[in-house]
Image 1 (cartoon, rainbow, N blue to C red):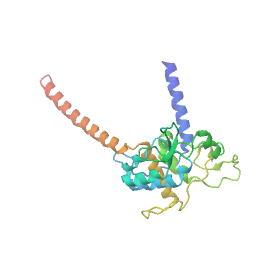
Image 2: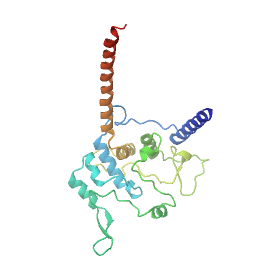
Image 3: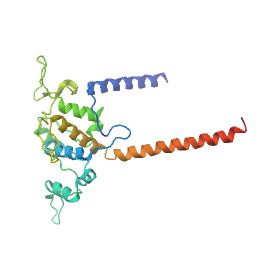
Image 4: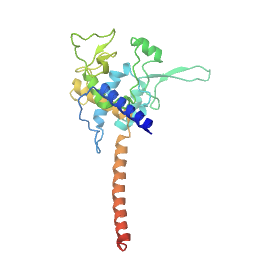
Length: 250
């Protein structure tokens, strides 16, 4: 038993150290989707998708998303078909046993920028750009981590030695990252006239990534509230029934 408690203590201690090193006490951001009643801002998700599409998609895949999933954030079927048709997928074999290229359709997954990992590494100085489908779940305090990371590109201290092909980022563990600064003021123009400041771009694309990792978030929270209410009401009835049944005994 003592051995088990020792293992649990070591695991908890190591996890806390890892969490602290990864988040580096990054500041917390206010999100619409946090809290018991938190919901997604679909306009922000759409803007975030545009940021991903115009900036991030050049290096990062989202292999768990289908183009048809965009209907959940307010795109119409015609808009989704138009978006998908801008990409090419390899399909087949055809009647002659050959693979062929065709425009992507709404039932296809998001097209990856690279054919394989080797091509991705070759194009990025040996680094492999991670898939972003569930990136906010893969990191401790994922939304805050991604948001601060996008804002964390600053000039390194004079005594800081950067590795070859690396960039300084004050919120990245080790303060070095292989990805060049992906966003800056005005990198993406919003169709709805929203200010395209760096902070706004980072917030919107992070919101999109949170939605992609957990599109059922609102349904889950709604169900959770209903379950809590059910147990409160059921518990009240059980309490009343118990008092009545044991009243004569008391």
